Amino acid sequence: MSDLRELYQQVILDHNKNPRNFRELPDATTKVEGFNPLCGDHYTVFLKIDGDVIRDVSFIGSGCAISKASASVMSATVKGKTRQEAEVLFDTFHKLVTGETHVSDDLGRFAPFAGVAEFPTRVKCAILAWHTLRSALEGEKQAVSTE
Amino acid sequence: MTTRTADRGPQTTAHRSPTTDRLSEAQPLRSAVRGLRSDYDVESIRRDFPILARSVHGRKLVYLDNAATTQKPQAVIDRLVRYYSEENSNVHRGVHYLSEVATSEYEAARTTVKRFLNARDEKEIVFTRGTTESINLVSQAWGRANVGEGDEVLITAIEHHSNIVPWQLLCGEKHAQLRIAPVNDAGEVMLDQFANLLTPRTKIVAVGHASNALGTINPIRQMIALAHANGSLILIDGAQGVPHLPIDVQELDCDFYAFSGHKVYGPTGIGVLYGKQPILDAMPPWQGGGDMILSVTFEKTTYNALPYKFEAGTPNISGVLGLAAALDYVSTAGIEKIGAHEHDLLVYATGRLVEIPGLRIIGTAAEKASVISFTLEGVHPHDIGTILDQEGVAIRTGHHCAQPLMMRFNVPATSRASFGMYNTREEVDALIAGLKRVIEVFR
Ligand SMILES: Cc1ncc(COP(=O)(O)O)c(C=O)c1O
Image (tube, rainbow over all chains, first blue to last red; front, top):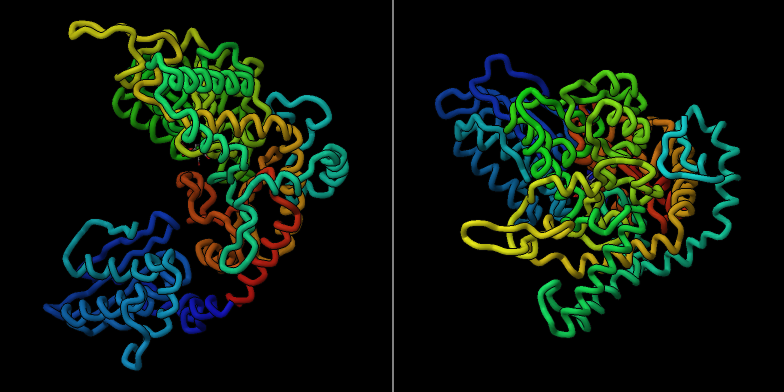
């Protein structure tokens, strides 16, 4: 049970219930779909990019609590960041959920996701929105899949 | 409506559905089921399955993912060990002692399968890798020779991907049409609509005996009769039929019947295609190679007789022997008794699940195998699966290889509990307790 509480932290449950930026973006410059065929998670990430800066981010779709909370946190953290900063955030998040780094003070909003590393089958859920973001930044039109 | 196959005697009603509104109606059935169950010793059966003694995450394993694959009894495991430690050799080609032993055991296993399905002849039993390969064999060898432009193939809306995609490939190649018989909100194929979709161009019908995603048992007797009256052949995907229902292919009169060993307590990588002999005889071979030939010159090859014509290359010998051991095990326990035991679990589990607020059962057909798909309001199936797993309860979550069906019911995914011959009511209770934990976490 303690492990479960680590995974389903209150912050994650809150984001799942009330995801941030959960809407379409009418003036998006790119949108990319991401899905996880194993469990049916399916999101579309919208970006409004202005030069090097991500002016706005939003997402729609459905999936498990982990994937939705992660998409919500992703949208909140990369808004206003440069492409390069977003890449660094991707990396930090990826390392955290795959257990390469451990929780530290500077993880901020990512900290609640540290528990994911204990659940290998759920890592894909946590990084789905981030992978989708990355391919949107790389200008890919293809849907991405974490399988 | 009695739609089941080859079911005779007092257990005829044993598979009646436990849909919510039928629960009260199902009560008297329970006692009938109990009578049958009296000599079904589930505890002794459990002891035959070594894996059931293990724990997962510090909890006793509660394995409720039998529609995905079943666990193996010691008899099957022992059979594999015996083959590799005492009999290993190639079949149909050596004159030495071991090859003779392996060949005769291999062919004896074919006889076991023949008896299990009540086929007329061993020639009608082709060993394949599983249901998927069996269906592909038919769609390619029979389909390519018999389906042409403008022809039609009829399937239903509750098929597994492996009974959809092979036909799509065939229809794509031949410019034929794939027709889909729709289901009602209970997840039952509507026979009148099914009948309407049969046309003079329908070359073959391919339907599941039971749905892995919803549990629905299709009225295959009627479907077979309708297909034949229309002059069409019919294949039954029996992946979810064989583990739960007695099968008599002669009585059914289906043209093809496919199933997988691993879903009926046998090894993975082995399955069966039953086909009526005249149809198999008329079919061109599928894969070429050793064993499927009589003589080869660079100018011309003469193919071997049935069933070897369809068994190219060294077969999965240990798998075949393990499958026969599994079918023997099931026959000893009694498929009717297994079905009745599972039905009791289905009724019990359905009754307990519907008490959970926000829980919706997807698939409430009047005739169901022991499969329950459900959704829980506000919680994604994947989260349910993870939390149950921490409690030692293994279920399946996702689209169950039936994406079109998920769309029909407007759900991205479901959670699915499926029962096998060794499950118990206590295990159903563990599932219910686990779901209460899910609700606690997500409250
Ligand atoms: C109804 C049905 N058909 C076909 C299959 C495919 O079986 P296999 O993967 O063993 O070939 C399955 C397995 O999930 C099934 O449930």
